[in-house]
Length: 412
Image (cartoon, rainbow, N blue to C red; front, side, top):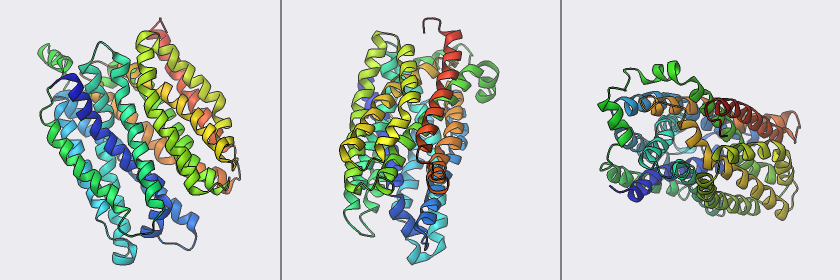
């Protein structure tokens, strides 16, 4: 299988997973009424955000399972099995009866399916990047950016699907994206079966450089890589789910912008984000990717409060500008982050170490970000809180990655 075909097949699965994840987040208000009916709409929304968080809590489980397999037996096996699990869980959500039909059983099953999805993503996201960076050594930053590109493209599809569904009120239409994603994911599983093992893994296996317990070896030999990965996961979790997902909630509930206008601004931003990621990655391959990454993190730390203040302006042009600033900064970091963090690991610990550190960071911060932002705005009346939270995540990431790369990569 040639490089271009491998990039398409690997990223197709990632795109589908993030399309579904984003669609679920954008449909939170609607789904909360179907599966968690409550007199208080805010309380029902908090429940569905809790289900959203449950999938993140299970990501470390997936990282441990699939990461161990990927570092000990090869990259291809977990890339197929994780996507198969995602297809089954996604189909389950699409076919699930709502609360009015089977009562609280629907709420329980929704949580179970979301947890299974979390396990699948825990093995898929970092694994896809490991595979691609080991396939393409000539353009390391571009190779490491394709997973981020696929995630952003998936978010654009999820946003577009949610925008279209929001114009209709039907107990069936919202199911179509889930069911369609499951069918396409099964097709991607079929295509992934022919992927060849990476040269890096084969060489490490030949030289007896693999480990019986890869994650334990990562803790012994790659602490810098674990710290670097965790820092990036904190930033991406807070920055994306605040500056993109919660941005829409703020624009509508606080700024009073019509939902369709908010959805349009978000979709435009995500599409531009996806376009810019490989462009910035190509720039990083021709210049200094570390400095580019640090610049993006620094600007995110400074400009995040401005982004969120534009989001609550109530003016479409201002909301769009805020979203465009967000997407430029996110694309700079996303284009460079994975190549930088994966360089901190040995081949025999790369899959499990990066997957677990990333999953733990997203489990804690990604799963809680929407709830924290809701608490800051609704209960503390701190409208600037989400923007400051984004700035804090950028500061933590910048300080950690700069320290790690300053020691290991003097050219940065």
